[in-house]
Amino acid sequence: MKSKIVVLALFIFTINIYGQNFENGTIITKRYDTIANVKIEKFNDAKSLVHIEYIDNEGNTQKPDIETVKYYTRGNEKFVRIYYDCEMILVKAVETGRKVNLYERDYDGSKTYYIEKVYDELIKVPSSSNKFSKEIGEFLIDNATLSSDIKDKKITDIKEVVSLYNEI
Figure 1 (spheres, rainbow, N blue to C red):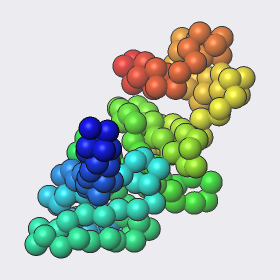
Figure 2: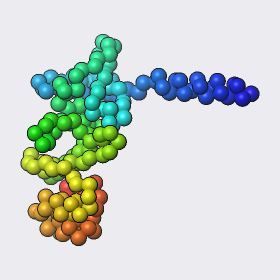
Figure 3: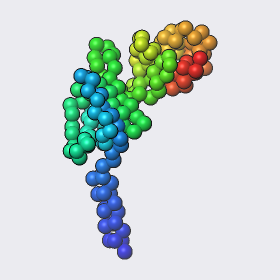
Figure 4: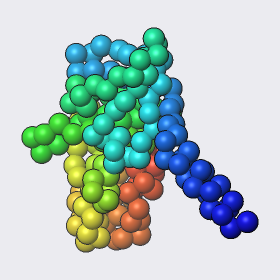
């Protein structure tokens, strides 16, 4: 009986390892070529920022160099290339709004957030609570009430900050 359970567990584990999960998506290259209606392999967020693999309309597996990708969607997820600190980096769009966008980069197990005023400035969200309240409060100073709440540490979650800022 135990051997049957072990064999079944090993079989299920093997299927899970080799099973691939693909979602519909679109890829925009740096040359603004559009690769639409493809099946993009679903990796974890960290791997999705450095590797992309998809099945084209003819059923062939394609592995383009991630550096050639400007933007891609995979299901409801969006990955975009941003310019930060003299470097182009690929990030996951957490929230896109009328006024500000929030991006996330999962690198070596730690998450870094970036907040961007639409068609304007982009900054890295500080991880220290003191720097967060000061820098994000100053960055969003045009909304006095929200800026004050951030500086007073009444609001400390960047996702909540972005949501509130986009509502006003």
